Length: 232
Length: 341
Image (cartoon, rainbow over all chains, first blue to last red; front, side, top):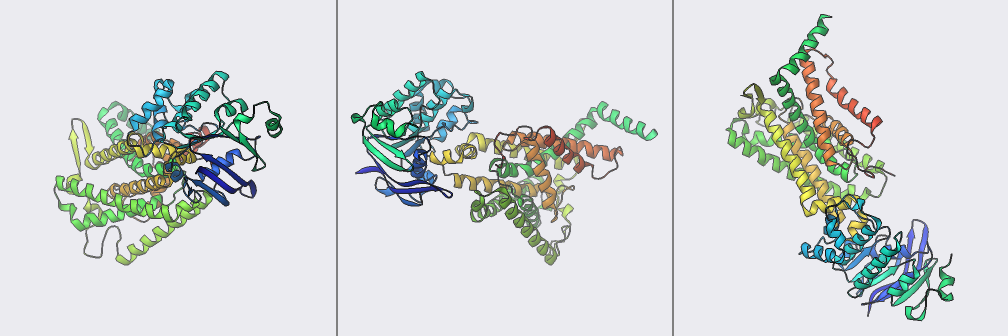
């Protein structure tokens, strides 16, 4: 059974018709990459799943239950976590407070904090520091840690390597690989090699629809099939 | 020439006699405590949630009238000190809860619908609510014959006489004279500041508030019920506005009247803006600043150095003008807060 299923999703920003009938699915335990050039609707797809920008038609189902019409916090409570593009730290809150905010319904917050600090020891060292004063790499670690400790079954991860130094990208990649052992992931990523390394399957988007899909084992980053879709 | 020398003499007297200077400072602290109680509710609603609530002053005015009614009803004026304190705290708690309930209804039924619209919609809505509430109270006051505290239905005691005996007069400690009502005001101001600070910084809900204020979408995506959080903040802000009315009721400079709504609203906005939107610390510091300036203005008026009766308002709004010119974000304003597009 599909874990996450999008069927004919049409989403608008005002009058702009962004998603024009998106169909995709993620099965349990799977990592799926959503590929495509800038502005084709990848982030809007994630926002539609989270009901931050609710679809006008079509359906988004998680474990067979429709998410359309739910509040975003209810989507999160259902077990869907978000690691957004640009990290979106609570800059004025400390590292620890950011992590505490990520587990609003947890009964054992200390255990969740322990998981985050075990995964990223640097966050433990900086726990009292304001998140806005962390480096880009540390902020990304914090964003990933927030997603990991949230008791989620599915993570929606948007451009995790964006703006990071190569060394940090490989750290982030390792963290995501480790996360993928425990949760399903829908990954939006511009770095094709990273996306294909992590994902089991891929979808390619263009002009608000899915135009190609397949197994990552069948393609490489240099394939003409992907290059044609992804080159500007 | 002689007048100027006299004023200079008063000034020298103030700064060379510690007792007198401390008395002015204590009055400043008492005024700051009133200001912080008036402005704290607004800083939660306007400073943090970005909702421009023009009904804030009306809530305080309702708090004052309701507290006056309750105090008279239970006959607190004739009670001993300990009983008065207990009754006063119970009345304050009751008013807080009643106004918090009214605030909840207002947020859920009206204000919530306008979060996504430009601020002018909130201004028009809350301004309309303020006028409605004020005129409703004016009608009630006229019909019930409540004028300067003279209640037709058996409560004939003038308002000022409702100040319990235990709280009238002053207490001398060494060279310093404490007005009893000032001590109560300062204590309540401190309790208000500590309680709000603890709520925002030491509770889980306070954390949700700060997270939701900073990035509503991200907070919701982490599982925080931001709508509910904002309702709670609005309720607490409204409750504090009402509770402030309870103490203003007894202060001769404020007293209970329908225009109290506007008299409260203006300095509250000044303090929140001077302190900086989104900063509770800023509100506390701005309250101290305005309270001290107010106290020194009052002292100058009493000595005859200044004869213009509107000196307090002039100085308070002068601070606002200077702040907006020199530092539009206020003393501790937070980037992004109050930047309406």
